[in-house]
Length: 243
Image 1 (spheres, one colour):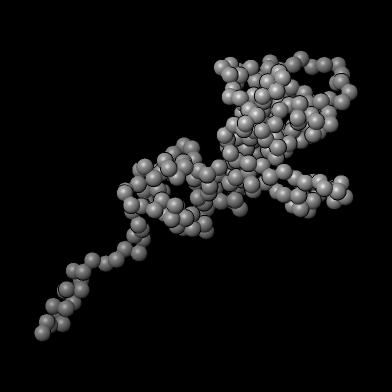
Image 2: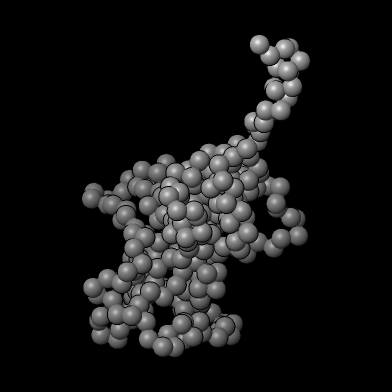
């Protein structure tokens, strides 16, 4: 039989399990996401993983690991990235930051595009009941929250607009389906509780594919989207809006 001294020596030579040890795929995902300057989709991450790794399961585990930390793993527009925990966002606020407030008209147009996309300027005006100034769309295009999608297959072939990943990121939405529905909008006071019978809030789609009534954008369409800033006018026309 081995002596007590020999047993102690054998125990001392046994490798000690590292409590901080983690599956290699979690370390790889962590490194890739930290190093990337933009969110990455599952397919891109899978290409860098060893064969046989369940990337979706590994991402779910990594997300759970970071849930209680100061940095969280979040999914935005089906892409993954690290963000400061929502309850700590105030730490990143600097008093020197200049906040640019959108006009009421711009907010209304943004909401219509988000819920009704793809939608043309004329369709936006029909929904709002007032003329939409070019400047209002320009402001939203400059923020990067909306984009031209294509051209409607109607006379004049007007541009159709939709939201962008930057819009989802700005409002911390994983997908457009996370936008508030009818009851939520009523609860926040953004909609009158006494709405007309049959009033509904459309369910927006994240599908970037052009619809049957849309044609692809033409060369130069993106350059023509933003017009030069208009000179100040002495007065505004009735029924229009200011950007």
